[in-house]
Length: 81
Image 1 (cartoon, one colour):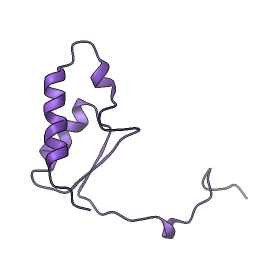
Image 2: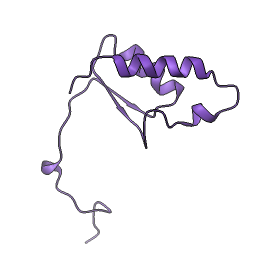
Image 3: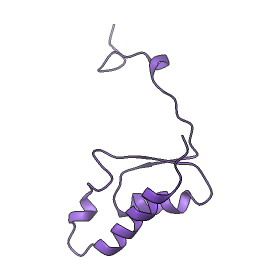
C-alpha cells in the first residue's frame, strides 16, 4: 500500500484553529491583504520564518517605509485564536 503522507501523523492530535481568512506569506501583498481583511474578519497568517523575513524586504525599489508601517499595524492589531 502507498502511504498517503510523507510523514506519518494523526490529524486528530493536531491543534485546530478556526479563521475566516488564511493568508500565506508575509510579503507586501500578504501584509496588505491581512490588514485589510482583519478589518472585517478573523485572519490567520502563515509564514516560512518570521514576519520580517520576506523577499519584498530585499526587492529593489520596495518601499521599506510602507512595509514597516504595515508590519507595525499588523503586530498591534488584536489577535483572536
